[in-house]
Length: 85
Image 1 (cartoon, rainbow, N blue to C red):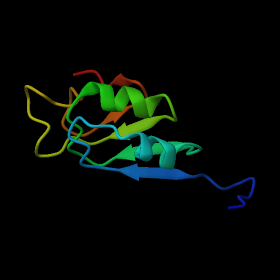
Image 2 (cartoon, rainbow, N blue to C red; image 1 turned 90 degrees about the vertical axis):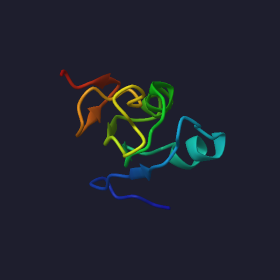
Image 3 (tube, helix red, strand yellow; image 1 turned 90 degrees about the horizontal axis):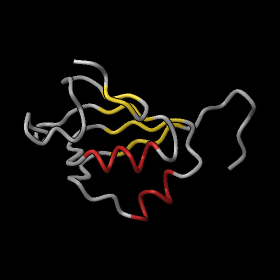
C-alpha cells in the first residue's frame, strides 16, 4: 500500500489477555502509532507493542486493579511509560 507524505498508519488491537501473538506483531509492524483498546492482560503486551510504535492503551474490564495490564490510571497508557497516578 502506498502512503502519501501526510498519511499516518494507526494500528488497532484489543483483547490480548496477556498473549502477544507473533502474527499480531507482524500485522502491526510499520504502524506509526498503536492503540490497544482494552483487556491487555500484562505489561509485557504493552512493552512488545511499544517496540513497534508509540502506544496508547485503555484499560478494559479484565484489566483489574491487581492485573491492570501495566496501566496505572483507568483511561490511558502512553508510549512505553504509564501515565503518573
